Image (cartoon, rainbow, N blue to C red; front, side, top):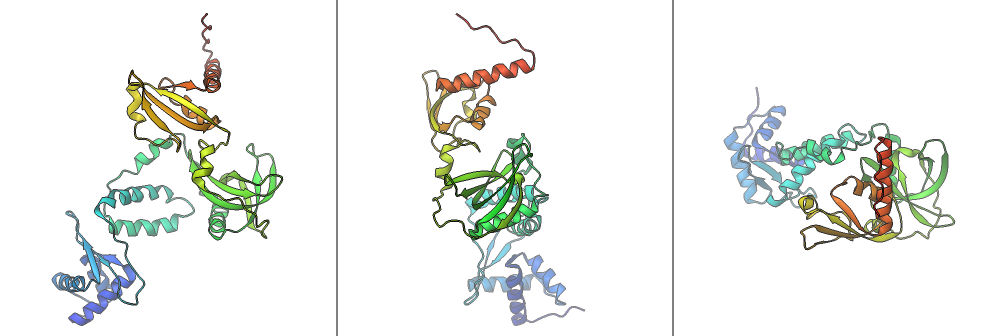
Length: 336
């Protein structure tokens, strides 16, 4: 038979519950007490929580379709604090809930499971569809499940600012090179993970490494105290995607019937947007004329026209002609 505690005992058990869980509903609390061999009526727990609320020990949020969720605010001398979420931040957290589901079958699955449980207590149910987050990755994305021996230490070395020695495969997988570097950060592009590392040599520079091409990684002694400063936003100004190059001033015309897909969107931190007299959008950027950028323009064939520079327009024309040859489509003769 379950023991029925008095009011003082219930408060103590409530504190034990919140020290362990930090957040929960009345049902969660009753289930917890039952597991400890105790029983309590729902109204009694609600009165206890109301008393704790008056003394700023707990706070709550209401859901029209769910029970009230109570959050532990901490007591003097207790460093445990619950993050207060504003109503206008809820969509962001629901999107986070959806996004982390992509990582449930990766090497960080264990931590993701725990985070997902905590978010589900804060924000029950589904508001944002996880499936739609893959729509902009229809080029596919790499399965990093087998890259545990690289990703885990790489995360640690970045956090601890630890020099490492890596064994790196060439893009065709036929050649291996070994070098020492200082990992700075990681980023994702088109379904692949990359690391930015600082290397010393004839030229001190920040390089990009494709994670799946790192076959080994191990800590090593410090190579140099002279490390180039690194700011990801500044560093990415000379990139569009992964590839690096000398920035050039680019002017693109987006046909007016497609401007809805480009308005209020971020493509590059140098972008400037205007309209011409016919209602077409003019998108200006200072970006390197690299493969990633050419590929992006060609993915909008029939929508984007390169106005400047002529060099870029000629390269797009050449790529289109070569593509037509692959399908035995004759290219039109140039007009006089």
